[in-house]
Image (tube, rainbow, N blue to C red; front, top):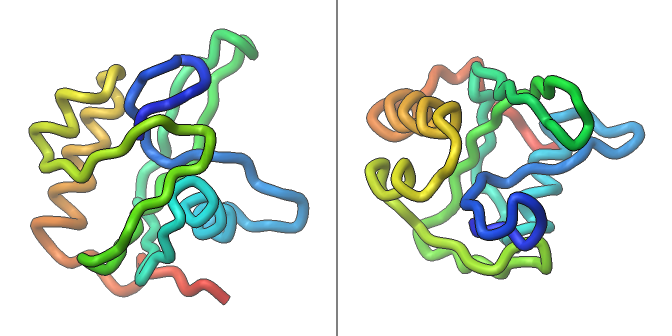
Length: 127
């Protein structure tokens, strides 16, 4: 998805904050629905953390990664945080993102969640 807020026009994944009383994986279900209008058919632990330096806050952010599956006929409805979206293969997705860590994470997700089925212990239930 292309961002409306800084870094403006950068392509990114769904992201957001955890609300009070919410677990990170519950926030993932909620944020995906809020930002894209999509209801996940499955959510998985990504078995990775995204780590990056946030210069606006002068801190290193370490965030859990989740991977969601949606039905093939799912329709995206973006909220006001984003201006555009695209369904991409790995090559195109890697060309769109700005940061090297994003490309590395995309390669990992493609290998572990597209080319093969993840282990059932990684599956999360929305409940």
